[in-house]
Image (cartoon, rainbow, N blue to C red; front, side, top):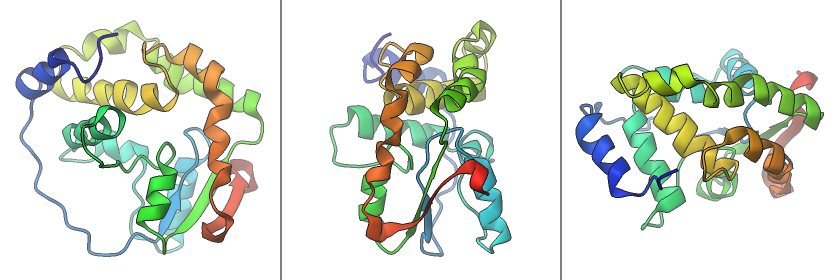
Length: 202
């Protein structure tokens, strides 16, 4: 796979698939909770639970893809800074970047959601992230539609491929090879942790 930091991808992102920038957003409330579990560990359920507990909105991975107007170009730029960057910036990719987020938001409570059965987690990943990554249909379509391009570019190339150490983009091999690595999040300093649990704990 051609490096995402190459002139080719920058050309495609800047000229072929460029979209107008959405209006800027300003934080009006402090960040109070960080959920730093890996994908397929109950993150959507936790997002819904936080809403029930009175948190107006928790930013979930689906927001990256489906908020309107979307900010996928900004996410790509942030991810490029983190993974390939020439700057000292960081992205709000909670699971792969939990240590920087904990340092940036020391007053936030940290929820480390996990999935206790690694084999079950791998099966879940196979049915979702790997299945999408292996889909020739999704891959083909993303070249002919701007939003589909950005959805693929951000999720499959910028977020999950570097997170699971798949520089070649082959997600299935990387997840099986590096799946246990995602659980290093359990090394978060205990003083910051509000709760550590599995998604089945509720």
